[in-house]
Length: 216
Image (cartoon, rainbow, N blue to C red; front, side, top):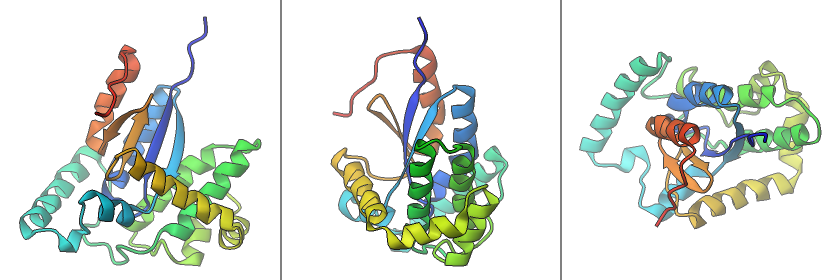
């Protein structure tokens, strides 16, 4: 009997630091496990606002300091470039998210999914390594095109089609309704794994085949 391919829901935002830190590791892990990633970009600041989270500059100084320490640690562990104070953080990622959703829609209709993986990572890298403005239209077009997508056309779709904005809003409502509270959130068989440092736990549950542990 053929084994079904694992499906992992991935709630994230291009302005999510920890989504960036875990991005390459997560994509490689999914490839190794022959898992399908369902990219679900959300309005992270809204999620924070309804779940007790705070934007970085509103957090107590102790937490801000420890976050910088963790950034240094994980930069070394993951072997990635990382800017601690990005020039354009937090820019509004919604337009770039909608370009991703448009590309996903087209891939579902027979397109290649590899450029989607590339764009999903480049969007994060733009903010956290390249200090680019993820809200800037030309930046979005450039990183989409570099990822193998038709950046200019997808940007026009993202600007013109209200259904894409509604989809991002629905995903944001979904993550709140499921009682998740940050990004990245990886979900496998309805069991959530919050944070890029839970990838190894996710790997264990897929490899072991154990039953999912539901969120209380």
